[in-house]
Image 1 (tube, helix red, strand yellow):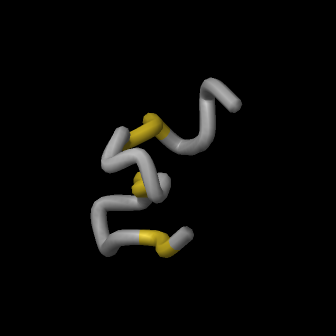
Image 2 (cartoon, rainbow, N blue to C red; image 1 turned 90 degrees about the horizontal axis):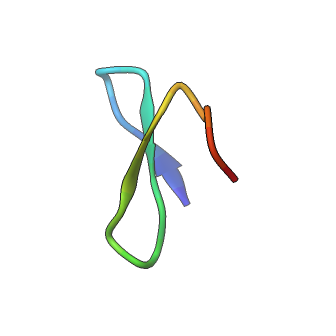
Length: 23
């Protein structure tokens, strides 16, 4: 898992979550 500069989290699935709103 890595955090992008846009403050979103990119999971290994390739899905991006808004400020870790969903798990």
